[in-house]
Length: 349
Ligand SMILES: [Zn+2]
Ligand SMILES: [Zn+2]
Image 1: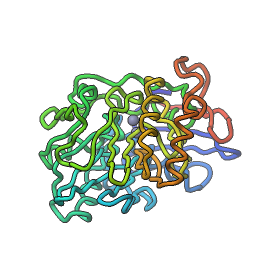
Image 2: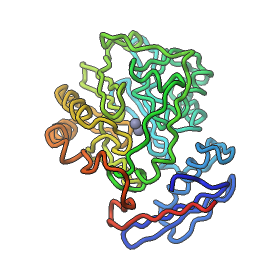
Image 3: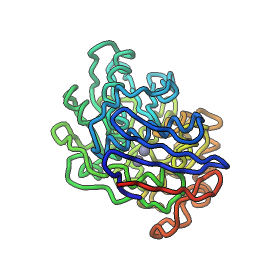
């Protein structure tokens, strides 16, 4: 289940009465078996992504045809705050009152070209940020970081505890594949855990919460999902960028991620290492009474829905977010979140 053999990936899954499979055979050839639902289309691209990041072959993600709904601008979330969703993860650009801007997170691997194109459409061709801020160092938030660091040559800020994962020194712990079920959880062992290395541009965030490039904003330590995870808050309009402290989509389910229905969930369970601290972080964020939520996964949310939903998540965190088997080794096959049917996997060598 944890390996990709040669040039072939086979994903088999069950959803409701539907069964489907995707075979990625070569650089640009994908064979879709079974039904032709929109969701299956996403899995094709995910298969391409997985194959690319495992190094099974060179593939240019920038040239892969991605359906329009897989690259979605999240416009005018708040004043000076705009975002872009590529596949299943969001990145954000924040403008400061002087007109400079900062990029928050850098998306999935192989998306540097897409990010630069989006930045060009916002700020003009060749525009360069004042800095990049990383909420944390997971692969789906640092995919384009090395490329963009080289291209822009600007400071990259992260929390002190996240530095080892951004400077090539430490791997993240393996994912908990029994947490949360769902296709994303099942695929999570295939996600890369190797650190990126951007030490040349890397800076620790100021300990007092200030961000020199963004005077209206401050960073808040929100550990649990990772040790050095941070969120960003602007007091003026109570806008909150939450990273993976929590999600507005059920990130363990590929189908929920693909549909992006707005609802509040905990952090991605397969990656979260400390659930007590994760709960503390959600409560810390709820105490800020944010009016705008901009998550790493899922759609942005605004008041009053945002505040109520976050209050509920903070109060009932253990029931809503915490997996019942958070530390148990993987003993049963993962199940489809919708149907409860087991998801089968087979990787021919
Ligand atoms: Zn994460
Ligand atoms: Zn994430």
